Amino acid sequence: MIEVWGRTMVVRYANSQLSVVSLRANDEGTLHFMVRDLSRLRLGISKNAEPVMLLYFRSPDFVVDGARTQHHPVPVFLDAEMREQAEALIQAVQSELLEMRRIAPRRPDLSPPKPLVGADGPIRPDVDAAAARMHSPVRAERIAVLREYTRLDEHYLELALAWHKGVAGILAISTVQVLFMAREAVHAFPVAFVDGVEVLGTPENGPVLRVSTGVMADLEFPGEDAADIDRCAQALRLVCEIDAVDGSIAWSRPSSADLFAEWQLLVERRTLGMVDDADFERRATGILLAMPN
Image 1 (cartoon, rainbow, N blue to C red):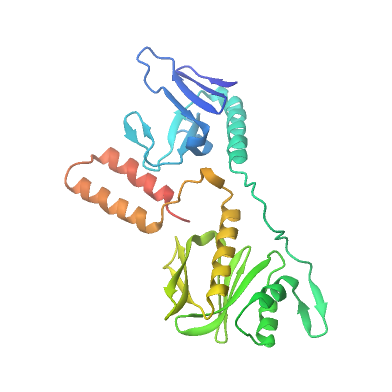
Image 2: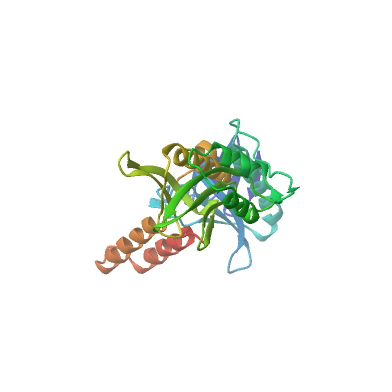
């Protein structure tokens, strides 16, 4: 057990549980919860230059003192001399959170390949292997150009012939980015931006890979071959899972659209007098903290 004692409360951590126990007679501020309910734990400084432990809960619906947290951190004010003990407790909790988020399923080796030099330029075994799995024929020179855009820190999983906004090109999925290479331009965005992946379309209209993001409009890539698009979708889901490192306890991250709708509802409730100024400021700050960077 790790304890952090203060003049008004004690914080206890043991057996994957955290307790904030008030030392006052009215028991105000007492809180008990599991470590898995947290998304993270931070140590800050209050206006009085005293340490404050900030509890970020995974769900905005988690109730503290009869009110939902609304993405807002719950502060636990500590005495100045308790900073060292608080840092030890936070480090222990963060270590447990990291262990909970460990991903254990067996996966292929996606280590970036060592760069090779061929007679006609750079050789990328991962790109060549992905090109060999494509059902749609593709010119060798286009694959050669794709090799020039590859980074040394990524591994390419799948390729497919696709279109984006009416322009034909090659869709490539790597461990760090989604790349669409057309004759006119090359587009790329990080895997960390991806919130969802699905395959749409009909046998008559062909497959469409839709990539949902939290920072921009959804991207759609109509494809030529259904099997190639399906492999790209599976590869992108795999790298998103690896990038998230959250495993089965991952709470779905709210999208910008969800948070904007929550903001509009909050403003409307304030206009109707259902939310006072203090509660409005607390909830508005929580929404801003949850917005994607």
